[in-house]
Image (cartoon, rainbow, N blue to C red; front, side):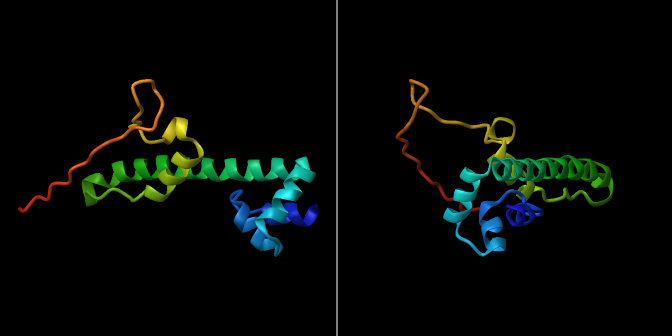
Length: 119
């Protein structure tokens, strides 16, 4: 189990990364997770730490962009950090536009027309 816990360090809680470090398949890693609650908790903690770092990066970059705006007028790219935050904490960072059917459920059929602007 100690080897598994070591592999979790610096993994961001990404199972594929942990399995690769251990030289095992994802299925084998999943069996370790089911077998040892300590491993499951460590992966959850690593994942939460990674999301926290991503959210911190978003805030930091927004602050830097605001401070640098008068000099460069170019915001710092935070799309990767936003993707992580939206994926791991959708209630806070998910897409604001959710389309559902009249009953609040899906699926929804839509027809989309793409118009090319010839300017």
